[in-house]
Amino acid sequence: VQLVESGGGLVQAGGSLILPCAASGRTFSIDRMGWFCQAPGMEREFVAAVRWGGAGTFYADSVKGRFTISRDSAKSTVYLQMNNLKPEDTAVYYCAADRRGVGPSIKATSYEYWGQGTQVTVSS
Image 1 (spheres, helix red, strand yellow):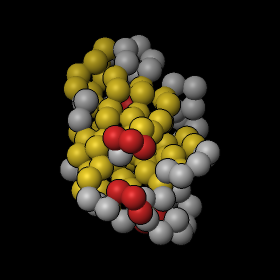
Image 2 (cartoon, helix red, strand yellow):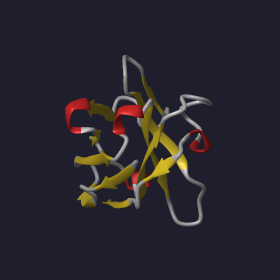
Image 3 (tube, one colour):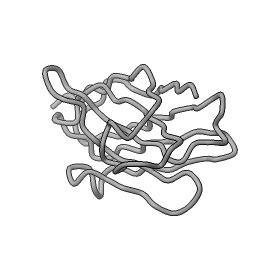
Image 4 (cartoon, rainbow, N blue to C red):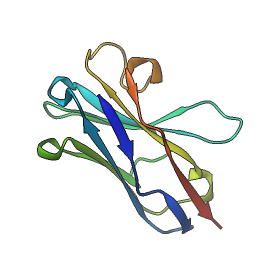
């Protein structure tokens, strides 16, 4: 499975961005996909995740009510809609995918595949 993120950029505080992540390869076997972020000098942190085959979305407390994760199974694409962005949201955002469905969706170690990341910068 290969993952390609896009949609990052520079936005003012309070603004919005949408990050698409397109999956290719053996996408039929994907169980879940997620978004993580990593700021300079910090560990990679969970942002949101979605189960591929049914209901189930998960969010970090810091983004609840502001970010929405969704999927388009026909396009093998997951989206992260980011609203009311804050300077502390500045980070590289990574898309991840997992086939096994083992382990908590909020843990980076639960995912097998990763994209190259896309930079999101929020100015104050």
